[in-house]
Length: 322
Image 1 (cartoon, helix red, strand yellow):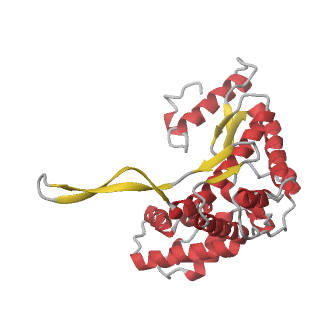
Image 2: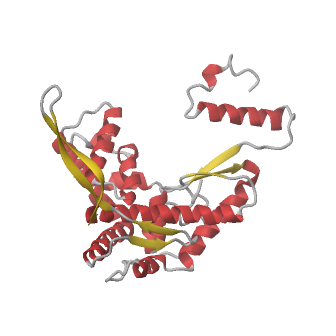
Image 3: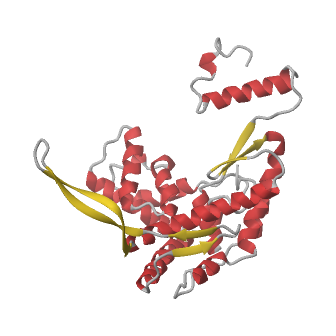
């Protein structure tokens, strides 16, 4: 902090060099030099795979809740590592030495947002490439399947909820529904309107002949496939937003939000941490929100519930947001 240029090698290769430098300057001013007696630097605390935290609350799935630090434990839990260990026996032998949390992390993070096998392939290929491994398409297909199958075993509640949402949305569209609407716990009204595009084929004759398909706007036909794929992730995002919205309303101090990361002054962090935990508890202990959502979309079947989670347990979870 006193001479960052001369000490460049000490900080320019850390994960977030400018944030690290700002923290050094703040600490130096407040603690060492004592030239400032208040702190204004925001520090961040993140959810552990927020999509799975929300889905665990919806399904009241204690096994998933434990893996994503909703339940108390004496050390941080690692869902990515557990999924990797479950998948490893089922991947090709050439991939087994490289199966770890980094290989599966992006898949585990995005499946709750309805990421499909095609995007999963890209994430795993990229993770293996960073390890210097080139994987052929058949081995990649087998690896993706093994990871997705592992998630069915390790996080059954969330996977069942997502499958149920897809099925019920499909049924709703078949019954003639043109929009999917729901209201979040914070009072935000969501209207999801997804129509098939109106397209025209255009032939071009510049430098040869080719045909391109161009969208000219919306048609009057509901895009059922898009609704099926979009509803679960949009619902999870809206509940994630509700958690942070309701937390921010109770927090009477400077705050910043970046998706599932909350930032505040270090001196305020204990207060904010308590508020976020209490808000999660209220969201899922006082309401059966999945049942409410089922009523809002006119679901024909009851939502899948594990009913093994007591949401109040999150109050004592040190690593829920950390």
